[in-house]
Image (cartoon, rainbow, N blue to C red):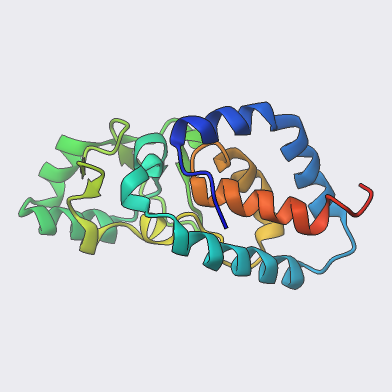
Length: 182
């Protein structure tokens, strides 16, 4: 199976399909398929697509979005770099004033996010604190998590960012929408 991996093409295709993708999001949220079944499809397609796409060739998530950071994650990244948490924070972080720029939840936000995009810890498409990276980064694109139907806005918004999300979303449309007379 051939998947689209170009960041530029993904952005262009997602923009071109914005209305269609939003309509599919609305369809999934209101369809008679259980959340568990939708999760099973997301997870199945995620496993298929992620085996074919090398995130280090893309790193668009590190270029376009910033994770929510916990204090423990800030301390771990600082230690990884041999810095104190305060020096790490002064160097790389600012107060979070743009909720639309961050992803992740679970109430773990320290109120601090990276000062700039792309992530200042990204070098040559690789994370310089990879073993100490935040959970939001480890987990991205979050398609393996339960209750995806309740996170459809995040998935919709990230179709233009992540080749894995874009391709999984396209497979979901084929499975649930195309050919079903919708």
